[in-house]
Length: 218
Ligand code: SF4
Ligand code: SF4
Image (tube, rainbow, N blue to C red):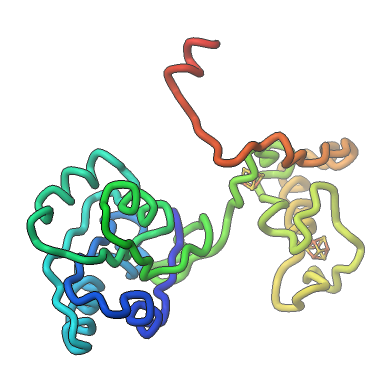
């Protein structure tokens, strides 16, 4: 899930500036779960903006804010509402989706933090940095890029103390987690094989994935 955190509301006011009529969009998946872009949060934002002299002319929470076709259909309902700006309460992807579909300025109400797991209702932890070359099969399912403070592909660095990372004594050393997991799996031999450099230069940004073309090339 994409984890987002609400920006300070004053930032939203600063971005809106002199605009008066505002459309609010959220997202029914990740931002609803993060409580940054569900129905309740849009209602709260409407109240806040109204109290600050803005007119919210429409609100929508599509199931997925990052689905271009879905968002296009949702936005159609507001084409005559006279909005001068859109405040998007989803992740950066959802914000860019909306920005590509409307002619008005689009402002993000959230900061996009990481791809992570839902530990419990209000607790999320970073799990993947989308490196484009997953090594979890070699590391016992523990991500070295995310769980190690230095994103070492071969570790540990030698600085760990009592199982904690040298950069933060409150955090487990990712490579000790990897060692413990591989030991449990009976796969410690994997530690004797050096992992290749991640080779980030292979990733050309922005990346695209075309499932049809990929299937045709297989
Ligand atoms: S190695 Fe880590 S960052 Fe890379 S894809 Fe796998 S889980 Fe994500
Ligand atoms: S102590 Fe462990 S988690 Fe911290 S930087 Fe070194 S290897 Fe990575």
